[in-house]
Image 1 (cartoon, rainbow, N blue to C red):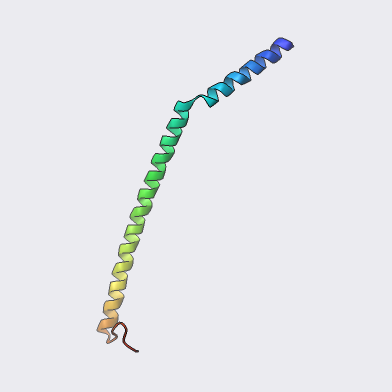
Image 2 (tube, rainbow, N blue to C red):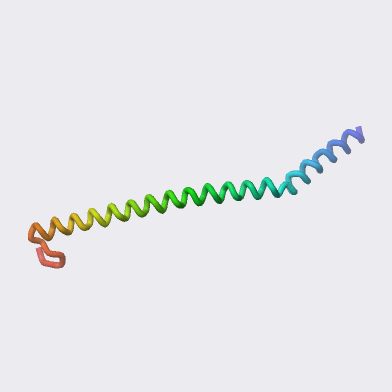
Length: 77
């Protein structure tokens, strides 16, 4: 019984050692997460840029319509 307990403890110690010292796995996981985050950030930047361009275009169209309709920016209505 004592030998089995010692083997189980040794097995647990080896597993813990391998998990804690598997730096290659940790490095790969970090690099993967970093690449994923960079991709998501680039996509968000693209959507933000597109949204900003659309808002600027719509704002210019509204200002043009107001000006053509006889309303000048800053003029009393």
